[in-house]
Image 1 (spheres, rainbow, N blue to C red):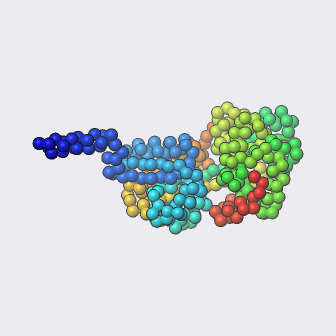
Image 2 (cartoon, rainbow, N blue to C red):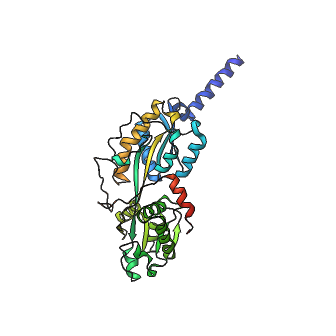
Image 3 (cartoon, rainbow, N blue to C red):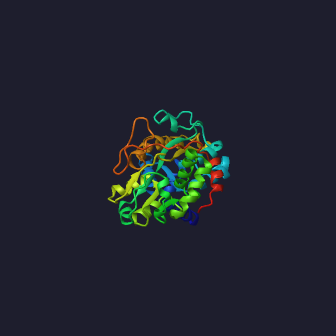
Amino acid sequence: MKKSKLLCLVLACLTVLSLLLPGCAKNGTAKIVIWTSGEDYRNEYYLSELEKKFPDYTINLEYMNTSTIAAKVIEEGENCTCDIILSEEYGYLKKCEPYLAELTDFDFSSFLPELVPESRKFTPESKNGGCIILNPKVLEEKNLPTPTSYQDLLDPAFKGLISMPSPTSSGTGYMFLRQLTNEWGEDEAFDYFAKLTDNILAYTSSGSGPVNALVQGEVAVGIGMTMQAATEISQGVDLTITFFAEGSPHSMYGNAVLAGSADRSEVMDVFNYLSTDLCRGNNENFCPEQIFTDSKPKMDGFPSEIPSGNMENDTQEEKERLLKKWTFS
């Protein structure tokens, strides 16, 4: 009799636990881990849509910066605890290629051909471009001319009135270093930044720093991200986006599947949905620089035409080599 009561008590406890831990029951179908370097608002969009599409899957979306994602993939190797990489820089994805699955069944034809990686081991997700951003009010208050070239920014009148992200801590800052190195040659580019440093208020640690400084009226000129400037403009902030003769530098971000997870149908279901339908949604709502052949999204405040800068040789090895030479911040 006592044993019967004890058994009933144990069964009752297990029933309560199963109700208190719905995640465990959900895990019985599939658990998928995604590492992303995307912004919070984009991560919320992706996760919300994935949960609607795959209500029976447990999907963990974990944020890490781009370098950390690559380091963990390489460190964990074939035993990587991640299934899908979302919104990672192309340079880092190329370093991770030995551990990425071959996407032999994925249809790359909807993307601009020049954005498709040769290895076909990752898919385009977004294009992050840079521009020159002006605060007309500060220019007027300081009686400054509107700059029309990089050389104009060397005018001593701009001392302390320019903000730029540091290439050593910001992918946005590195975009400009990479582009001008391609355009002018390495020696001339580094000589230029040595002179420009005299006019920099401070090299910011993140790509959002220059736009924040412009919004607060701390500087007249920002060397920063087009998307962030456009977002502020769409909200009524008086800023102007311009491009110098060299055009807009840019970085590409992509999605990938870890080789050890490619044989799981649920992982491939999530990856394919991320990299097609949700990728289009991200392009239309958050990152409107063109990546699809049949779509050129429009957003308030975002330039309709963007001259593309020279981003040749944009490899992780080149990045590491150039950054060893950077001594200005």
